[in-house]
Structure formats: structure tokens, C-alpha cells
Image (cartoon, rainbow, N blue to C red):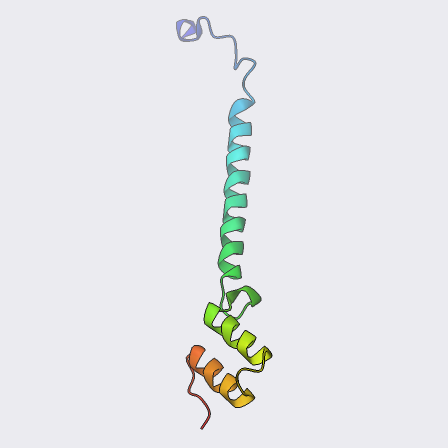
Length: 86
């Protein structure tokens, strides 16, 4: 049995590399999951950054007085996929 361990002097000076690599991989994966979940939550409709270019133009036209309030509300409803008011 001693011939199997001949020349083996222990784990050596780099025995900490394995656990450090495992820790780094765990932390890296956790950070990646947090980033992906954060980006998915930001993409939810209804947030301030989710306005369509058409809605932005419509708001600008209303602000300049080019269209009436009723026209604005009807067109905004159409852009949102709703039925305009009668």
C-alpha cells in the first residue's frame, strides 16, 4: 500500500485554487441571474421608457396645439390598442 503513495507530499501550495474557483463561479452566476432578471423587469409595459414613438409624436402635436383634446384621447386609445370613445 505504501507504493501507491510514494512521492506524494500532500496537496501542495495550490490547494486553495479549487474552492476559490467554485466561489467565483457561484458569485458570477448569481450576478448574471440578477442582471438578467433586472433587465426583464425593466422591459415590462407601462414603464416610462416603454412609450412608442407614435405616442411621443402624438403628445408633441397635442402640446403644440395642432390637435384637440378629443382627437388626442381618441388617437392615444388607438395607439394603445383600445377602442376610441364615441
